[in-house]
Length: 222
Image 1 (tube, rainbow, N blue to C red):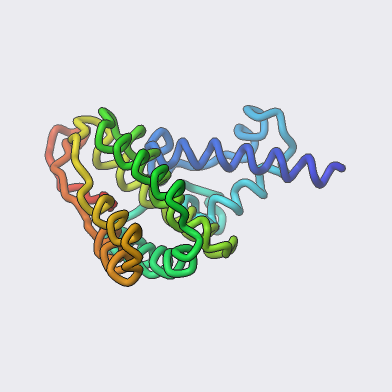
Image 2 (image 1 turned 120 degrees about the vertical axis):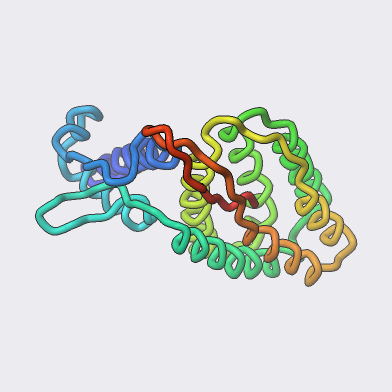
């Protein structure tokens, strides 16, 4: 019973910390102090350590000898790697999911696209965008593949929040509509090709640093 409780607590801690990292509340390089987190959540060190391991597996934290666990940093090279991995794995999942995509599922995916197009902030857009992608790949019935794709979406969201935390630009996602059209017409390979291009599109936006200087920030906007 204790092991089950620890696992449940670890899941909750890792989920909350992941959200803080993804949304930028915990910045790159921030030390994750085991004692402080255990106290915050009223937990022992066992589930906290497990939560840290889960964050490391997601690429959101890094464990360093004699320095403890810190929030992982990220750069453009990593962003490109995530985009390429998402393209390969989501296309694989879509090919397996396609025979099981019902008109009802595609209608829900279209609703998610409309919600994303009408989003006024990055958090609501990211949620709707992730819902669209998840609806299309979940019927593949490959839980390990879906778990990796979920982790990649979390990392993608991190870049997105860092770039468009403020001044969100409302957009119409023509790629989503093209993918849905191909799927409704049974053109699976065209849908897969459109998805592959879509998730590798990297947007650039000038962002002001705390010092007042400006830098280019990048994010996967797909």
